[in-house]
Length: 142
Image (cartoon, rainbow, N blue to C red; front, side, top):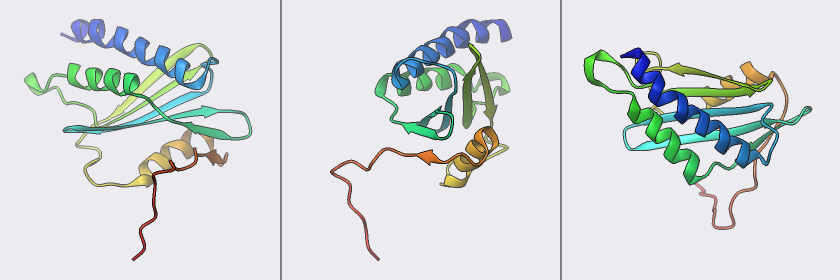
């Protein structure tokens, strides 16, 4: 069963890597993908180490679809749990993937600190540059 899982997930994670390289515009070294997923929602965050700073890049529909496929490839049958958080890093030409599961973290509770903690663990105190808000964004006042 584990071999079948690898046969399905291996190529999917390779496709994720190819799409991440496309999103960052070429150089794969220093890419970090942080994903939280739950029933009917997914939140991927793409980061690129630029040396003195980390850049947050917008993900796209192709990446979300690949991640959704990977998450659904994890069968809930037979006691196998689907992951809640995935961290995917490309470094020195290789990718490394780690997971956290529902019994470790409740992603249904919104907490931006989880992502920030993952960034600090990976990149230390490097500043993170986020894209500007879309022109259609607005600020809510109390």
